[in-house]
Image (cartoon, rainbow, N blue to C red; front, side, top):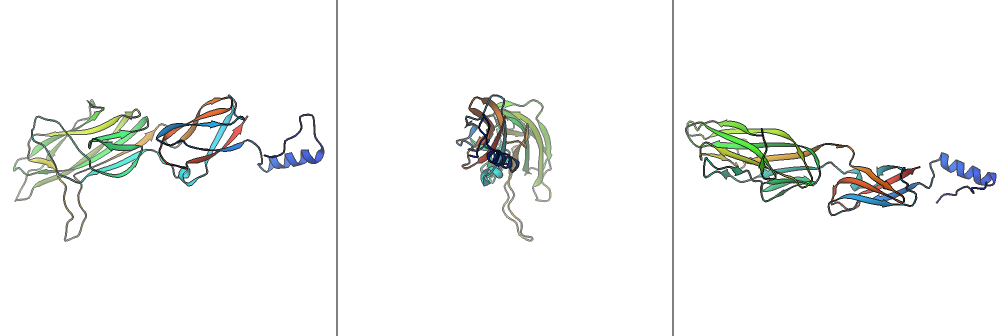
Length: 259
């Protein structure tokens, strides 16, 4: 703690020291806070210097806090996906998590979010047609088990020709308003069971990597996408920080209390 002035007045040397400290930024209104873990979305600062009208400024002071990012997820399917009926809707499944921060998989087809906000969902699927006739595919979204109005897209998959299966890779993106713990699934149907989502092995001549049957990405875009931590409430001696669901240790911030 830096020296403070006596309310009744003080000697010139002490006054000079206190003033010089303030000019150099040495004051008694700073502290540190580490975000709660366990996917907590709030952390409380307990500090007797905080008041109902205090302004609290935050800055990351640990590597974990400095590298904090908005929620995102990237997933793949490395398996063939077929349909058994042209009158049944099927969920596209995902078996590989490439990246995950607040967006995660469950039940093989659900992309779950831990934070409320607007998300950009992008997908692409590698469709194969083994029939000699062209066939159509419908793709749409379900949110928490309910079809999303207006989300269906139609794709025509080329027919096989010259002994070569018909191929097409299709994809597009959606903006979605999601609440914490909502989940999204991608559903599809086709006019023939000859249509499938196809995983392809690595190729040769030239050498090339495998082809996922399905790829999806989901990233948070709004609101406050660039402000991960903020003060949501103040009281005498405490303040509540609101932040993205946190499961990373040592996300530590320094703070300055003004007023």
